[in-house]
Length: 175
Image (cartoon, rainbow, N blue to C red; front, top):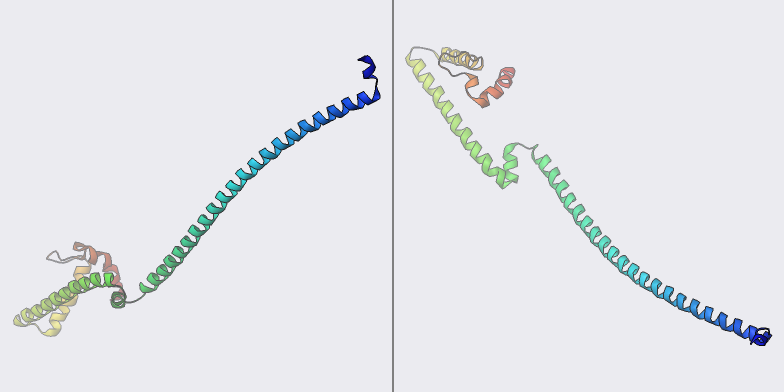
């Protein structure tokens, strides 16, 4: 055997077998690495597909939200322009507002009717008491000042009604 060791043919044959075995082991390791890389690539492909679907869904959601935002902005612009109109024109453009506006107009009409009736009553009583129309009008103007100044004799002061109280200063400044 020792003579085979120094035999150059035997030495090269052994080296060749060792190299062949090393190459086979490297081939096996390379195949295992290739299989692992294929698995990672498949996993990455799945992840990329999932992310692509998610990005697509988010883009669609974003598009829908932008459209909804545009509608809301247009609606907001419409409402802002609507609020600049006189109330009767607002009522013509919005049926919900029309119902409440008509109810308010009815309250206002009843109030105007009662004021006209009180004025007529005051003139009838004043004339029956011997006062002229000018004297009755002067008493009326004095009564307005007394109500706004919260100085009436029969507790008909402006502070007795919240709406009148809130607008008393505006009424005084417009006189």
